[in-house]
Length: 309
Ligand code: RIB
Image (cartoon, rainbow, N blue to C red):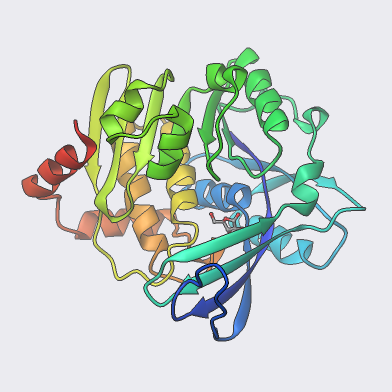
């Protein structure tokens, strides 16, 4: 069983012709709202991936923002450990999505900052704890250390990008980062291979958008080329990747297989609007993998060169 501990936000989304630069105003289209938050998105992705049960520890305010988030988690089959923060508003995110599917996100954490060390449920039922960085770093560190002490595998998606304290780094079994987050965690600028040399974690997986992903585990390097899709909204693609990766690993799949499923699910998430609404189910991912062409050798070589592997 998987425990996801982290943020839940209501996402306020507006589609814009382009992401505004500092000082610029752009005229967008209609405002829509979707359940989101990196933690809740990853919990939904784990649950939809199937194979293992998913629980989530989250904090919510006493406001209407909480309702759509709870409904979405419930519909996905996620069992909730809820902390109510009466004085805090449920987390919210303000998202601009451009016509070329990129996004810019500002998060108001609100109740997410109300989680504390004592809220972690007993670790006995869980094989994996999946964390992100939208709750306070000290709390992430305490959860990771408690899980490690109980023999639970600790997976951190280090998003949004922040440097990590040593005691957190020491507790992580699997780190999932994009290129920007990799540079921040590694405190190094260079190609992916050289950044990875600055990180001492048993397994690090790097997501590379449409290029795919790569990983290093115990000195072995893994490459998984991406899938080509018509992208509409990339919001939560990384969350989908993280959740599906952990679900596949906790079912006992190999890292290579887990990365392939996570890549496919992340690509599918880009084809629909919204965070949790866009996350595909197990059948959709499996038929996408079955029906699509296998990666070309040239894609693998391009990815190898890009990563410096
Ligand atoms: O990763 C996407 C998520 O980031 C959004 O759902 C938003 O809530 C922010 O947490």
